[in-house]
Structures are given as C-alpha cells and as structure tokens.
Amino acid sequence: MKEIDFAPGDGFSVLRGKNAQGKTSLLESILFAATSKSHRTNTEKDLVGKDGDGFRIALEAEASERSVKLEAFWRQGAKRFKVNGVPLERVSDILGHISVILFSPEDTALVRGGASVRRAFMDMELSQLSAAYLNALQNYRKALRQRNEILRQPHAPRGLLEAWDPQLARYGDELIAQRAAYLEELSALAQEAYLHLSGGEVLRAAYKPDIGPGENLYEAFGASADADVRRRQTTRGPHRDDIVLTVDGQPARSHGSQGQQKTAALCLRLADLELVKRRIGEYPALMLDEVFSELDAERVHRLFDVIDPSAQCIVTTTDTDPSSNPAGRDATQFLMEAGRLRAL
Image (cartoon, rainbow, N blue to C red):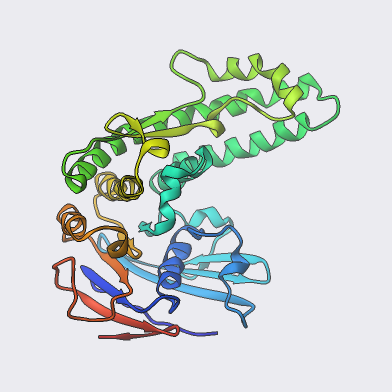
C-alpha cells in the first residue's frame, strides 16, 4: 500500500500531474475522511488499490484555535473512524469535525441528474452544519425503512402502517424546515456567484418540497395510504423533495448548455463555501478538481475573484508547468506522478 504525506498551504495550493496519476484520489481521500463518503462511488471497495485489501487515511486540521485528527479505516467491508484517537460508535459521527467542499467534473450530475442527487447534496451539506438535521435525517430514514417494509408485505396491516406516521411527520417536518431555510440562503449566494462568472445570467435554486405550503405532512401520509399499499412504498414525504435550477428562467437541466450546467454546479459549491462561513464563522477547505479544464480562461479569472483569498483552496491541474498559474495567485505547488507526491 502506498503512503502519501500531503501538507497543503494555508491559502492556495496547486496539485499538478498528468491524467491518472492519483490527484483526484488524493482529494477523494480528504473528502472521505471528513464525511465518510466518496464523490464518485458508494462502494468503498472501489477505493482500494489493485493489490490492496484496505486503506487508512489520517487527516489533521487546525481551525478556530483548535486542532483535530480524523482517522478513517476500511478493510474487508468494515468501515471505522476515530476522532483524536477515540473510536466512533456511528460512522455518521464523523460529520462536522472538519468541513470540506469538493467540486469535481462529476458535479454536473447536480444539474443533469435526478432528484436523488440533489437531495443527497442537501443532506450532506446540512448534516455537516446541523446536528439537529443529521439526527432528524437518521430517524426519518429509519422510520421510512420500517414503513416500507410493512408496505412490502402481501397484506400490509393498516394499524402497523399508521403507527409510523407520527414519527415520520415529526422528523420530516424538521427536514423540510431546514431545507427551505438552507435553499433560500444558498440560492441568493449561488445567484451572486453565477452572475459574476457568467457576466450577467441569473441562476436560481428553488426548493421543491413534495409536501408543499399549506399541506400537513402527517395528513399526507394518511391520505396516500391506499396508493402506498398499491405501490408498496411510501409515495409522499421529504424523501421525494427536489431542487429546481433555472438559468434566466429556463430549466438548467433540460435547456442549459454544457457550459451553463457546469457553471451552475460550480456555483452551488461556491455558494455553500460562503454559507458555511456564515454558519460556523470560518471557511471550509475548498477543493477544485480540474476546474481549469472545466472553464475558459475568462471564467477562471472571474472564479478566483469570487473565492476569498483567506479560504484554503486546493486545485488540481494536468498542466505540469509550475510557471503556469491561471488563478494569478501565489501558490504552494506539488507534482503527482504515478501515485507519488513531491513539492515543487
């Protein structure tokens, strides 16, 4: 198993290397240690090297006059985490210790993909910001699984079905309220970033709850019971929410150009950067994977006008020339070759 030590600068760092050298995997390891998730797969085995049977990631950070060390382990299907040497009982307890944001080419799925992708975005970002949201999400999912198991029975007992509705409504209401407040704030920030990057176009990110204003979640579960029994699944609730993204009033998913879709996805991440700063008082680490190849030179220049210089930012690029710096900022530079990292 290869070992890599990576100590990015406090400000702007550039990670250079040709394709398939390990740059993205390095950013992915930071994301995994901080969130327990990869941005490209839900199967941890896919993260293991060809000749390996597991991995260990240690991530140390300093913020707000405190330091924290996270450790992530995966071996033969078992995933474990430690914080400052103390094992965690639940994987989800890793969230909130270190805040990181990753933009990658795969993020266009936030615009082009289905509603589940955008819900996962909301859930991950809010779970890092709010312990109450994470608790509500976990309990809602648990109740939803139980209700759906009953619905999959040949003759679903109505009494057992209805027994889960109060719990689903209680935690679902919390999810809806926090998502609505988050999207209102995120949309304004994303609009500001997009306006700057595009030179005049207007991006909006609107929360589209399955249970709309004026509807009661608990009553909606009862009203949909017959349909739920027929379809053998819970058909109403925040597990069916979405975000509607528009550019100049047109749906970005169906009418946006590739450039508009990429820029919209990037602006969601930039908006989240500022939102986290507002909520916790400091910037998270921002990682931009191949953003230079995703944007033209003018938009790259505008991008780094948007990103506060005090934010720690790590950018990957296939350009191995240390003198090339489209961002126009002083940078700590590294070169990745065949999985080996060295400072430039």
